[in-house]
Length: 103
Length: 177
Image: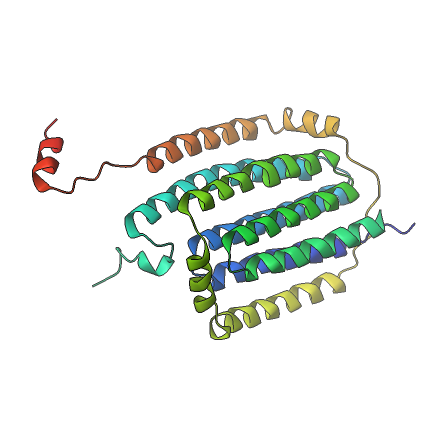
């Protein structure tokens, strides 16, 4: 059977990454923006694993493990921030967070 | 293996499109779990079984459960969905989507122009990953440990709630000690 082409996997990773980017750019709810960031991190990991699979080296999978650890740390801090924002502003709208706006 | 890759990548792309177009947060989360499971199948078809298992256990199992806990704690339901429907008008999403589509077109043209070779279908075993992780990448593993520690401390500090005092006398009394 014909094996998968390397560029096909990279195209899938690029489409996934850009879907996440569209999510970050268009959503106003901070929870959906966090979800879109998770999609982007996952797509970057897919590109790493595809590269590791192309050269038959374990480094791509090692990099995916580091992305995984980073995503776990990021999500825990970000969800704590989301809870605080909801308790203080009673909304998840990012446009409500304008304390630093120039007067 | 080729058929497996194409089916699972189609499912991943479809589920991701559903994630960024849903109004209810919990529906988006469940579609994202489907997307992660499909990406795990892609990893399996690329010959990376260890990473595929970790994707299911940590991404779809742990991180998404954290999100679901938060959605349930905040009690986001029909009101949030109605607000999202009001926010997500074509005027909002058309511009960014068109710009990103242009970027995607450029990327695909560049990827198709290059002479990429076919992937060798062999798997990289978990043993090789472990030997590489605890050999040349040992310092990065320790740094990841620092990062997780900082994440735990940061989440515990940010997540604690200060007690709210509705009366100013109570507030003054509580600030003295």
